[in-house]
Image (cartoon, rainbow, N blue to C red):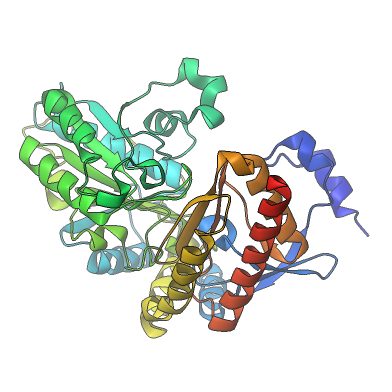
Length: 440
């Protein structure tokens, strides 16, 4: 019988993992999963507190999604979308257009979030080139943004902790101040004063800016920075006024995570381009997409012999098996009324994180939809204490990952009342004991 941990350390390169620290751990090796629970090779179960990197919104091993994947593998395994099409991707495109913010009628497929962001940015820049305005080629993003790990995406969301070793080969975008509510001087009297930096930057650079890209209502990898939907609404109005495209990166916050089907819905806005991924297939298979308005799409039509082809593509763009998983996922959202069900864990988390925010050593806490986070204060050990919370939670059967000084819960939308209470109980217990140890 294979020694999985030994073989892992001999061959597997883990992403976002301190390799030396990892090698010293008796880490879990997950073998099966059901609902919101993971099960390792030793038979121990773990509550999936981060939806397996923010994507398994409908839980593991959902019968309808699994059945759809299996059935599709017997019909059509792969068919390209360059110069031809297939029935599954056509059906999925119509379904996405129907549920997206109004006007996003065109769908382009990629394999992961980062590659979809690259496509969206290239679409935005070429849109202006198509219109005879090649000087509009800059992209503006937010400080602390994360839009993926390919080099172009890294430039949009440069995070020194992640990307310092490759900074010399990255073309960094201009960044506006982040709407970072945990460290906002106006937190008790918010009238979106934080927007002034973005507005100033856009007005100064409108003639050369192709697009602004933001993660609407929550900057994920920056530390679950949840901010008011009104910020996004103001940004939409300003982009319209200044003739700048708005790109909404909904890879993490889309498909019910923020309490609406898409976070842009909370702001009642229509982006020009919207990027989705992660839970597009329920988290079961790699697939991402860019949804675009007809206006952006129509700029790529041939006119007077000029070649406006979008020379950008992925081998598995619109893969039939991934498309089947995505179709099944959207069907489950409708038939099982997932958005309504998600209100149960959302309300429990909201109340709990208000309570957690009052614990000595917690700087601030927040929650929106099925996203919640709190920051450990410097006096309480910041990142070291956050790591201790996660380590202690793992021992008690809850899998979470800290983001620097931030610990958070991001459970599947289908989490039931008793499971959510168990998750919050473990989280709260580990938080209090880790803070107590740190402040002794």
